[in-house]
Length: 544
Ligand code: NA7
Image (cartoon, rainbow, N blue to C red; front, top):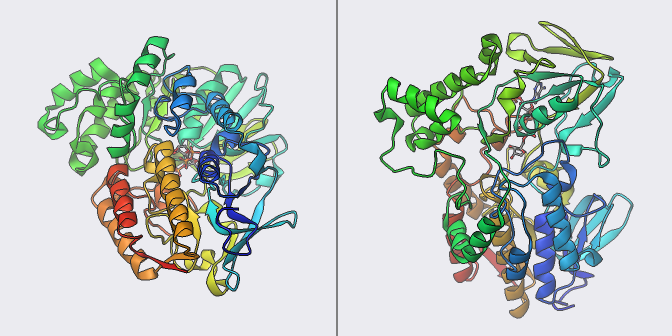
């Protein structure tokens, strides 16, 4: 063991074998450290392992939603579509595991229940549901941001007599929907992706919508070999731009339509109603992506919302249904943008019923359907597309104890506190990959994962070389970082008063309303992390 400075069995124990856990393992192993990865599932893939619902697809172009750390890997993996579907992304995760022989250091079917810092020994003991203990000098949480499905508490839920599924916990063998009458609750990304695909084969689909969403057509299509080769030869530039960008996405040669030629002077506030109407007629939803002021100016945003609603009414044949599908009262861009394929068109099908819960909410779930204040809807299969306890959920479900038995769950009772989304005061040698306070879910996750893992691997090598045994941040440093995270989020649509997103924890009853990710951009964030490292890990105390 390279860093054998303590009584730990491993240099690092990593929790989770999604993309972040896999890359952390690869990187640390390459540097000569001993690593054990513990994973609940029976294989790699994390989010893409669990979210197997029909229609599950990435909302980042696949050439960009890929790792850059291996030139061979990025040349040899041939994505088949502009936006890859879940089976292909899971295939990519498996390919990485095979190619770099990762599975030999991953223990599957292993649920971590506790991670405790043993102060006297200076090691982390990570314990599992089956009673095993693993010790590491470092403990790295690669537990994902959308890994704890949220099932709302609804009266009578246990009385439902048919099959029940959650999009975030979909059965491996899939579900045959033919001859089924299905009820689905939720119209976030998962619902919006699943609804059109399920509607294709189902006898009848009833959609229970609490809040209509803003969603843009994906314009997904097959990737040609010619385009792929061109992108590969441009990879050095694409990767550089990704790292310096806001969201880790260049949109190289893709664009969702309408957004390619935006100029800074393109402002919706400068347009007339007729111009806007003409544009929507010509370009559909894509017209709305043209304007830069929409993200920062509430008045501009409302004009974009009007354009959006006018396009909804064009696509939907029954205007009563169109009215139900129109988002109102909150801005475009407050929630995570949804990208869809044939979502609105689905409501023109005869076998699809939309229940707008704003006109009478769910009262209870019965054995054979849902009773709402506007009537009873009968079906035999229930799907929850009700999202996740995002960003903090997976961490708070593990009993994490730092110095003096200090519990993370207590420390975060009023909301998550971190320095750079990487470390928490009172928890030495403990790290979170893409944690709250880092760009994480606001960015291309693969870009952010690579940056966090590279930074952490360099830190662990530095500590080993200089014989430091612990690294720890302080609550004062956290305060400063949190103040900065809040400052940059102010004035954006993300934190608008009328916004209730999972970024804010607003989807989970009782969760503190805190804007969790860092909106300053992956480029700025990377710069900050590099400066911190260059200054001898400023904001952290290193001890021998
Ligand atoms: P989301 O975006 O959190 O969406 C969950 C949906 O479920 C949303 O429409 C909710 O309505 C709805 N919901 C939640 N609880 C209820 C109850 N009790 N009754 C009715 N409707 C309910 O989760 P997704 O899985 O779709 O997407 C998460 C991310 O995964 C996504 O952003 C991508 O990054 C990938 P609400 O809006 O709260 O009224």
